[in-house]
Image (tube, rainbow, N blue to C red; front, top):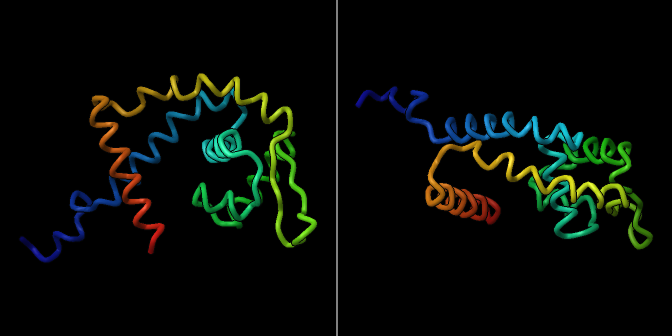
Length: 145
């Protein structure tokens, strides 16, 4: 083995993760256009539909986004009338974010998205389950560091 083999693209773990993630997001674009959401906005909305309102910091932890990425995204969702942002009375430095009625109503329209995206990774179901479990475990371990 040549010492430069470590620099070959084919020997990198990060590259197929990056390329697959980029391709999955690209394939999600069409179903999400019906909701007028980007993939990242969709992730944020799914988090609100599951957990309800929370602080911007709590949301950032759940979706693995920093404030610099999250703040403009939340402003756009607020402008679309899907969420509200308000300073917390007990700590004015914290923003509490919650769904509006329109944001909650979008949940019904979003039900079709997972089905439309279902075939975007062409692997048998058992491989998809294993892939998700491995990625969940890797992310969990990264969160501990």
